Length: 419
Image 1 (tube, rainbow, N blue to C red):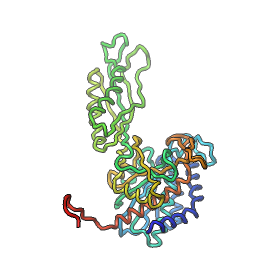
Image 2: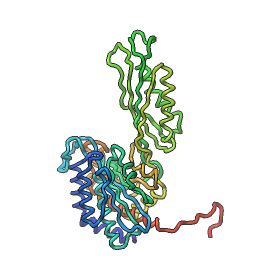
Image 3: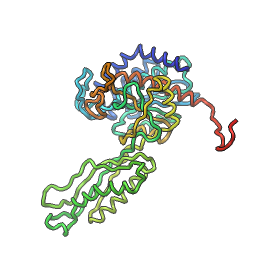
Image 4: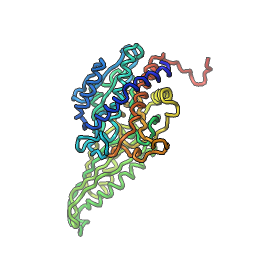
C-alpha cells in the first residue's frame, strides 16, 4: 500500500472513530482492573472484536485474549497491548477518574489497549479488502504489572507461528505525536532479592560472645552491591538496590534474625542469566566473615527488553511514513522492567515509546501537568496520543508483513565485488 493511500485511509478511519476511541479509553480508565482480574476489560474487547466479525479467543485463565486477522498463507506479525492496572489511588480531578478505590490506570495500559483495539479494527478492514499481505495477531495481555502475563500468553501458544512482534508504551517525557525508538536494550531485567540473616542473639554489651547480626546485615547491604559492580562489565548496568531492611526490636539486644529486600536490575541478557549464582556466591563470602548464616531467595521478574535492529527499522519506516520523519526521536535506556521482554527472548521484535506529553495550548511550552511520571496517581495523557498510536501500530504491522514477504537476500561475501 502506498504511503499516501495508507495515511488517507487511516485518517478517514480515525476521523469517524476518534471520539468513540477516547470514550472507550475513558471507560477503561474509570473501571481499572488488577492483574488476572481484567474480566470486564476482556469482555469489552471481546464484544468489540466480535461485532467487527472477528473471532477472538479468551486466554485459559479467563482474562486477556488473542485475535488473528487476515490470511495464514504469509508471514505473521504480533501486536501486543497490556490491559491491567496498578494498585494505586487515582488522584486526578477529571470526569473519567477511577471508580475503583485504590486501583488506577497509572501506566497508560488503557491507552495501549484502546490503540491495539482500533489498529485491529482497521487491519480487519484491510483484510476484508484483500490488502493484508499476511496475518496479524492481536495479543491483549493480562498481568504485565505483576508480572507474569506474558509467560501465560506464551504457554497458551500466543506467539506460536508469530514471526515478529511489536508493542507501544506511553512515555510522558515525549511529546504527543512523537515516537521514541532505540536499538538494543530499552528496559532492564528486574528481579527481586530477599536475604534472611540468622545467628545467635545476645547483649549489645557483649558482641564478641555472639554474632553481631545487625552489623553483619549492614555489611551485606553495603558490600554486596559494591562487589557486584566489580564482578561484571559496567556496561551491563547490573545493580542491586535495597528497598527494605529489618532487624531487632530493642536497642540493647542483638537480634537473632534480620531481613533485607531489594531489586536486581540489568541491561545485559547474559549477565542477567548468571546474576543469581553470582549474588549467592558473594553473599556467602560476606556473611561468613561475620559468623552469620545468610539465606537467599532470588525471584526472577523479567529479562531485559532488547529491541532487534531490523524491527526497529520497520518501526522507523512506519513512523516516518505515517507521522513524518520528525516524529522519530531517540529514547534513553530505562532500568524499569517490562515483561514484553519475554516475547523478545523467543522471537524478534521491538518496543517503542508513544509520546503522551502535551504542550500548553498555543505556546509550545510543555505543560507541567503533562510531565507527571508513570506509576503515579496523577498520571494522565494527551488523548491525541491514541490516534497517533493507532497510526503507528497499523502502519508497523503492514510494513512488517510486506517486509516478511520479500525473498531472502543473498548477502555478498565481505570483500567480494558487487554486481
